[in-house]
Amino acid sequence: MYGYPASHYSMPLESIERIELVRGTGSLQYGAQFGGMLNYVSKQGDTTRPISFENITTIGSFNLLSTYNAIGGKKGKFRYYAYIEKKSRDGYRKNVHTSGEAQSIALTYEPNTSFSVKLEWSRSKYIYRIPGLLTDSMFYANPNN
Image (cartoon, rainbow, N blue to C red):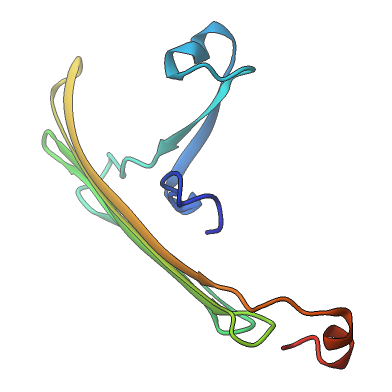
């Protein structure tokens, strides 16, 4: 949730099927990264049934609520996968609050095994409010401020 979303899109890790490490000259097709690159492969939906549902919900300290809901499947020559994720929490100190959300929809049309067309839309939004600095004396008096 805190990766660098100001400079790139950070998808929820729950939506990732696997992470590939591409090394050597094969990584040059993605840019001039020295030493290789990471390729995040998104989930594509269950191809064995027309509809499937996935839910991951976490509740924790400081009003943490995190939920990930996804639906996917395959019907005929169409495959689809969509998710919505929401996270929210208050921090240990006063005036701390974090909230974030992400959505994605992917629709794939595969008329035969050697050709497919995919339409995909994704977005994310987050707000990260942090409190001000504490001096040593303020921290010793009350570390929650």
